[in-house]
Image (tube, rainbow, N blue to C red; front, top):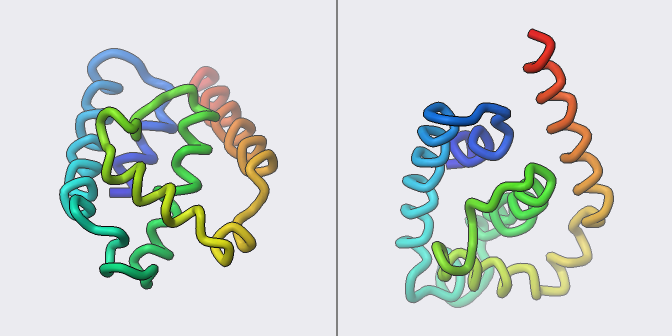
Length: 122
């Protein structure tokens, strides 16, 4: 799932290639959405190992979306993913161990700019 979503968000391309990347990402996100329907967390009622891994989707992906100016994971399309992410990120232990949003956003903005510049010069 992560490679498909990451490719769609990092892509500097437009047109058919971008559409294909978005379709691949959405296909993977639908699997996670279906897995989360009716659940509080991936492992049940408490945060488990899979939820910890899922912080990539809950915290890091929204930063990447903002940096890229693209919206793949929205409440309208993926309400179960978004509700799960809110519950997960509301946990104090999780909040205390995440990097600051501002630094993460700046990191992603610089990374995307560098990737787009490399594509433009090649």
